[in-house]
Image (cartoon, rainbow, N blue to C red; front, side):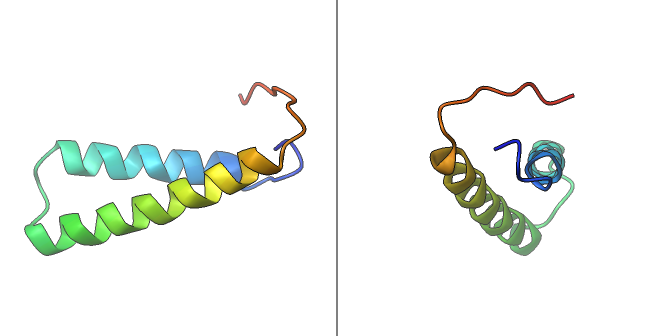
Length: 60
């Protein structure tokens, strides 16, 4: 995980998506697109974590 410099940016984007969906300021189509993007990001993050060697690294 520590070898992937983009994991933090993926997590930050996921947080942004959650905030956007929580504010109810997006229409149904935009919400569906955000949901799909979030699912793709979650899949990528899970794959990165599954490749890890069980090492726990704290992100700043």
